[in-house]
Figure 1 (cartoon, helix red, strand yellow):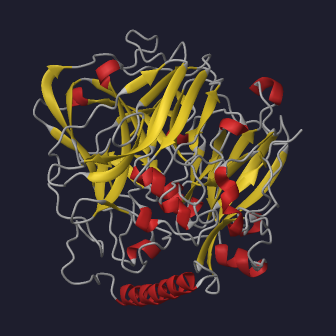
Figure 2 (figure 1 turned 60 degrees about the vertical axis):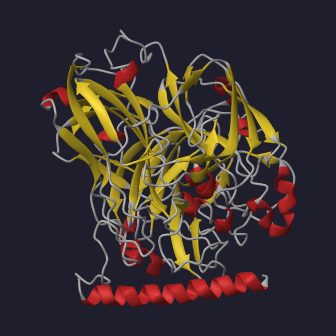
Length: 588
C-alpha cells in the first residue's frame, strides 16, 4: 500500500472516531443537533439554498428501432435556474441522463455503444484504493453499459470487468425475449459505477408487448403518450458553485470511498424539485430510483390513493391500491394516479419519509423530504378507468430444488483500507467461491442481512418472486457462528434465529422483480428459476474476452483470462463498488 493510501486510511479511521463521538452524543440526547443546522439542509456539507418548483419536469426524449447508437460523453448541465451549469455525463447526445429506449419483446435490438468521455466531472472523487481502480481512471474513464433487467447474453450484459475507455466501444445485442417490463440502462464499470451513474449515465428502457403496447387504444386501457411519464428520481448534493458533489460529510476526505452518499436535494429527470403540470385525469407514472445510496418511501403529501400496476418484470396480476410505495436504488414502480380527484389549481407534492439509517443519521443527515410538485390544471385529461385485471399469467412461485443461504455484511476491519468493507458471504469480488446454479433449476435464495441498514440486492440475467421476510436475532446468530477472516465464506443457516412469522411481500412486490430490499437484521426469501440455454437462445455460461481491464492487473484481480457468467450485488452503488458484489455462473 502506498503512502497516500496510508494517509487516507488514517484520516478515515479518525473520521470514524468522530462519528463514534457523534453517536455517543445522540445516545445522550434524542434531540441533540449541531448548532445552526437548518432541518431542511441537515448535511455538514450542504447544498446551497434552492427554491423548489421553479422549473417544469422535462420530458425525456425517446428512441426506438432495431439499430441504435448510444454514446457516453462529457457535457454541462444546469440542474436549477439559480445554479450555474455543472460538468456532467450523458448518453445519446443528452447533456445529462439518456433517452428512453422503447423496444418490443420479439425485437432484436443492436446498440452500438461508444465511450466519448473527455473531461470527467468527478475525477477528484476517484479512489484508486478500491480494487479495479487506478489513477488512470481520472482521465481515461472506464465504462460498461448494462441493461438492468435484461435477459442478455453474458458478453453483452455490461460485466464490470468488460470495460471501454474513451475511444473504445462495444456492440450489444438485446434479444428482449420476455414479457413487457420496466428496464433501465446504466454504467457498471468496476469500482466506478457510483460515480459514473451519479454524473449522469442513466436511462430508461421500456419493453413493450402486444398487451402493454404503450400506444393509444391499448387493450388494457392504460394511459399513453403525454399521460405516461418516465420519472428518474435521484438525490444530490451541490457545491456553492453548482457542481455535482458526492460528498455530504467532512469525515471522508475527497478522493476516498464513502459507504453512504445521500443527497439533500431531490432531482427528477435532471431538474431540482420540478413542478409537473397535469390535466385532470389518469396518468401512468414510471418511477425509477436511480440513487447511489438512498431508499425512499414515496407518497403524496395528501396521502391520496394510487394504484401500483407493475414492478421491474412487468405488469402485476391486477392493480394494487396503496398510498405509498417503497423503492430502493435500482427498483422501479409502475403507477396509475388519478388527478381528477383534485380540483383545478390544486397542488400535491411527491414526498419521502423513509427514516435515515442510524449510522448515517449520526452524521447529521435527515430525510430528504420532497421530489416534485404536481400542479393540476383545468383541462380534461385521460378519462379511462382503472383496469380490473392486468396479467393473466402471474403464477405463484414454484417449489425450490435448492435452498441457498447468502449473507449481506458490513464489518469494520481497521487494518484494511478502507477500514469498512461491504461484502456478500464474507467474500471479496475476486474470490473464487461463487454460486453455481444449474440451468433449469428453481432455487430459493435466503438473503440474510446482518447489518443495521437495508440493502437492495440485484441479480443479473434473471427475475425472481419475493416469498416474504422475517426478522432475525443477528447477535445470537453471530455469537453461535463467529465470522471468520474476510475471504472465507460465511453463510450459516439463520432458521433457528428467526424472531417473527413470515411477512408476505408488499403489494408492489407481487410481480416479477430483479431487485429487492433486504431490511436490516432480517431474512428476505426469493424464488428464482435459472433458464436453460435453449430457451434463452444463447449460452449463459459462455466465456468472453475481457476489455481494457488488463491494465489493472497491478490491483490483483483474480485471473486475467477470459470472463464468464454474471454478477449479483447490492444496488447501493456505494456498496457495490467496495465490495458488495460477487460473480455467479449458470452451469449445465
